[in-house]
Image 1 (cartoon, rainbow, N blue to C red):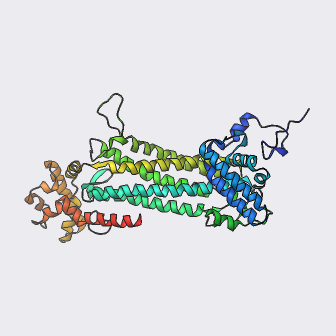
Image 2 (image 1 turned 180 degrees about the vertical axis):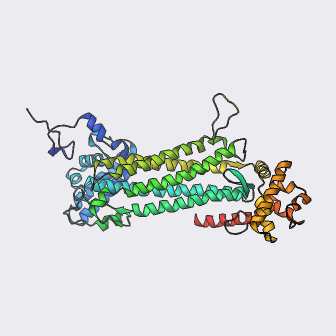
Image 3 (image 1 turned 180 degrees about the horizontal axis):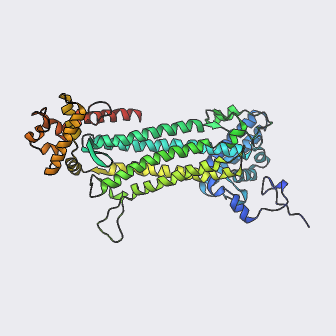
Length: 464
């Protein structure tokens, strides 16, 4: 029986094998359909590697010149759409290397000296994620700016603050929006922190043990803008902590956006009617002509679960792997890429949507009248006059019960009725029962007084 040997030009590893790969195995193991998005990073990494090889005398200056020329042609072909991606060549790395070799000959074959696809892909994915984080931080800044602009516009607009989704105390709409901003500020810090740990160079680790060639890893790190090198070759090729951390930061960001979305959905409901969202971010119904559905916030809630799934997938992917590299790690890219896309698209659309949110202050004020929102202010008033807070709490509870029986809000109770609950009640009591009085009294840093909201916005603009 004669042996069948695949052409060595088709597979870089073909010499070891006596049988061709089946089409099913080709499709199952290939990653080029999704990892080709890293082509820019792959070329950048290869050019830095080639420059280092020439500097170290491992390849000639003529080889470097040919590689640079060939990569410029590859770049042009990919950008124009003329590049032919082949499933037979498995991944982005072999596709580019094959075309480079076709263009420049032996110089293209020498490019892979001193490296492996293991450290090559680890480098590409770090470069890709670093670029993605930089883009996300820009998008996050645009989203934050939209929040700050809306908060400034609504810094003094009274609305109910809720606990247990029950009316609790008066706040301003601007203050509520600034709570959203604080969430995004922590998100920005997390992404910046992930970037710092992502920005280490694996190249030079080769397959798992390093290389016998006299390479200069620090030179390559500097060329590619890395902060330093991964210091253990086994860890360098097998580490995917940075991808997991990114998905964790993404999951937290999406959780925050989902909470914002839930509130927007509630506030658009006629039972609340606190806000309007611009028509361009909503849809209608196929049979109910009156409907205006907040599809963008609803989809953001749904896409949050999608990002949670990617985090779980990567954690599960890594938990059983021995050192060093395993083919399992090919499965790291699709969850990571989709998390990048989902977060980026969500931030982009929310930055556009926020300016189109219109407050409905009359409805917000009506809700304040229905929930005895200034009850705590009355308890604080009695406490300042000498009544222990627990006794003040009880007295106000009785007053609320009486107001509920009469179907009125606390400020609408007659003075004598209020005084019947505590002899400490005086003529100045009504000044603390107004919404404006309640807001103005909370004038410390972090409080909901309009002047403090505006000060918080000013501080936030400096940080952004």
